[in-house]
Image (cartoon, rainbow, N blue to C red):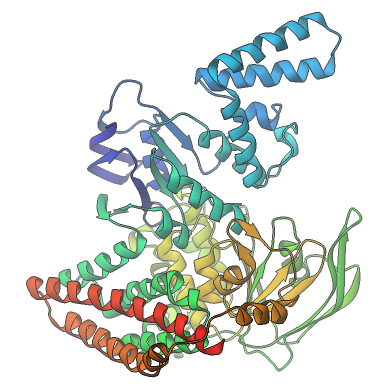
Amino acid sequence: MSQLIVENLTKTVGEKTLFKNIEFTVVNGEKIGLIGINGTGKSTLLSIIAGLEEADTLLMDHPNRYRIAYLPQEPEVNPELTVMETVFMSDASIIKTNLEYELALKELSAEPESTVNQERYAKYQNDMDNLNGWDINSKARTILTKLGIDTFDKKMSELSGGQKKRVSLAKVLIEPTDLLLLDEPTNHLDVESIMWLSDYLQSEQTAIIFVTHDRYFLDELSTHIYELADQTLYSHTGNYGNYLESKAIREEMAAATDDKLRNRYRSELKWIRRGAKARSTKQKARIDRFDDLSEKVKKHSDDTEMEVALKSTRLGKKVIEAVHVSKSFAGRKVIDDFSSILQSGDRIAVVGPNGAGKTTLLNLFSHEIDPDSGVLEIGSTVKIAHFQQHTPIMNEKKRIIEYIRDTSNDIEGADGVRISASQMLERFLFPTKSHGTPIGKLSGGERKRLYLLKLLMEQPNVLLLDEPTNDLDLETLSVLEAFIDTFPGVVLTISHDRFFLDRTSTKLWVLDGTGFIDTWFGTYSDFLETYVAPGKLEKASPNVNTDRDLNVEKNEKKKMTYAEKREFETIDKEIEKVEVDIEKTEKEMSACGSDYDELARLTESLNVLNTNYEKLIERWTYLQEMNEG
């Protein structure tokens, strides 16, 4: 079994030590999610393993011919190469042959009468036969298509930044490799591509270390979690949900943090479980019951979400109204006759395929562009903050604290207490010792976090968030989610992060790419489960044929037996009893202090209860559907 052994790995950048004497072993088939706050060295660690960056000290052992493929966060590409030529740039002989074949085909297509071209094409066609290279060729085209790239002869200079990242991802996915290193592979991918990528990577036998902000993707793919914190690498067996559970227990046992931080982990764990199980029932009664239970669990620390709660500018009755708004680019209608009224408290996710016009819609609402027709009426009290995909240019010599104080020295919290710029930096995970750091020394993710804080310090009452999750660490996303929970104004969000949208949105504007915008009430996962078949996003409007399809489905269902009717009458009480037992067990866990044996016993008991609870919910769903039939 091939494996990579890393020992005594230390890396210092300037005066900052990222990690010191860390060690780990990667075994074939493991899928390792690498997490940590921006600036802790996640990208640097991948770059060192890939051999592209020097470490201060490092002992690395692996078998001869151990192959590593690496996707950086911002891949560099040759602008003069085509898509297929870029994908086939490799040292592997079978992929080199594919490149030569593509070049020969290109030359033959340009001059089909050339004898030289004909002979060269025949040679590489024969080589492809001998090496069985056609499988790689077909695989490359399939992967590109799944990632939304369907024009293979375009030059890389003609592609957008997101398209270049997807081509680079396809390149590493076809590499014969023992270890695959992926830095934010889901950036710039739509939901269909992310779902496909998760399934594809799970089926691969190669070892993978990946950095991602997408918590559903992280939970679905990972078999291990590596956490970089305090210059140390912590290893956890299991997926992201398992990590959150062990993290919460570790924090409780060590008494290292207060109840607010522990409840944040518990709350996130509930959402992960809910995303995997409860939401799949699509039954409002069960979801409401789950929400009630979550509130009971959190009630012992009701100020959890107040950590970053700020007083925002007052919103009047009128917020923003779109009246028959249309917008076209180069003759293509992007927004077509859209009308809607934003109300205080709205939490709207703007979703749809790449290129459908999501960013255009936010730019219209921020008045950065004007509609071709129709009007956008904005209330006199509205104060908009627009978080854009690309971090604006910053003065790299300016210190962090100065950058924030340029906006305000302090800010009023929701409770009326003034919060200094320094305190806000700490709440956004910039420790006091870092406040004098020049911006030029920050990582890309740290700059994005700083930019986000600066916008919030302006105390807006309407937030337009365009891909806020790209490049932000999970801790920062938790802070932002907590802020949105208590934000009294309006939030419009574009993101491909399913978890973030589920946490922060209650309504969807669904763009189909033709200019039409439909409205969906509910979570993004509910929408996906209803209108996304395995690996395929349905293009039909959510309102089309829904009732007819449901009626057909119901007519085909069997009737309940007498025993099932009796079971259905009592299953609610069984579920209630398990919920009470779960709540009781969680209270006992919180109260057992440093009694590790008792905590281990209660943890095992809680796992059994949760398993039973999930089985009861699945059974209740089946019986409910039978009863409705």
